[in-house]
Amino acid sequence: MPIKTHKYTNGEITVLWQPDICIHSAICFKGLAEVFDPRRKPWIDMNQADTERIIDQVKKCPSGAISIIEKKN
Ligand code: SF4
Image 1 (cartoon, rainbow, N blue to C red):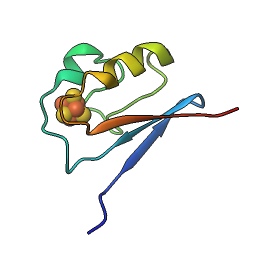
Image 2: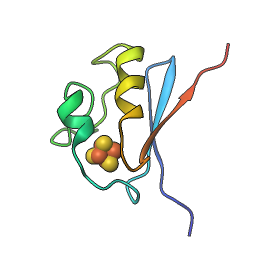
Image 3: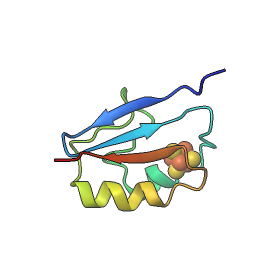
């Protein structure tokens, strides 16, 4: 079965979220709630923080459910 993936972009980078891998640790929410807010739809809003902060927070995800694709120029 293919792994479900949702994509969220700010034009510079794209965050991929794989809900079946997410262990709902809320580390992303506690660390950067402006971007990662499960009470909102869509729950990831890429316009609420700069790219560096989003990359730093994605690196802290314990399950690898969120990852980054960087846009190549
Ligand atoms: S940090 Fe990763 S595993 Fe935890 S809620 Fe966020 S996406 Fe899911």
